[in-house]
Length: 221
Image (cartoon, rainbow, N blue to C red; front, side):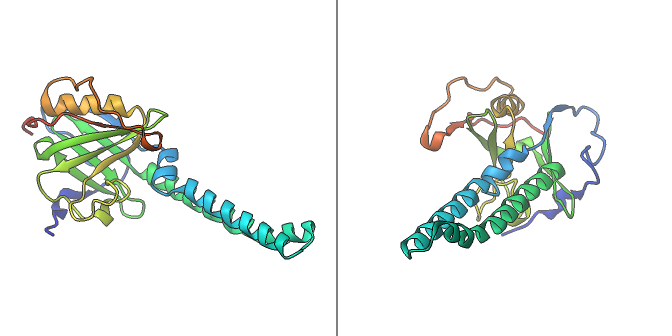
C-alpha cells in the first residue's frame, strides 16, 4: 500500500501549522470530545461491563462454594483495584488524544492535527474527498468518515481519527465531534457548494442514527 507521508507535517500546538495562503479561509475548527473518545474509541463502557460480569461471577462462585458473605466480598474485592486502574488509564488516554487533536475545515481542505507523543498534521484537499458520511449519537455528537480518491496514510498511524475496521483503505474520520450534523452541513457546502440534504436515512440500531451526506463532485482545491 502506497504511503503518502509527505502530507504529514509537525505541529507544535493547536493552531494551524502554518499560515493559510491567500484566498483560503477557515470554515470550522473543533476537537473530539473526551467522552466520545472514551466511550467509542477506548471502549470504557465495555471495560466496566467486563469487570462487572467478572465480579458478579466471582461472588456467585464464592457463594456457591458455601463461603460466608463477608469473606466472599473480601475475596472478590481484589477486582476493584484493576477495574479502577483500567478505567482511569483509558479515560486519561482519551483526554490526552482529545487534547492533542484539532480538526480544521477550510474552503480548500480538511486538516487533521493529532498525535500525543509526535504531533502531526494531515492535509486533505477537498478535491480528494469522493464521499463523506455521518453517524450521529443521542447527545448530538458524531463521526464523519471521509472516503478519499487516493491513499493518505496507514490506519494505525491515523487511529483513533480513522473509521474503525477499514484497514486496507483507511478513511480519515472527524471523530466524536460535538454538533456533528452542523459540521456535516458545513462540509457538504464546502464540497458541493450546496446545502446538505435535509432528508437523511435513519438506522436506530444500538440507539445510533446513521446518515449519509450526498455524493457530489468536490470543489476544486
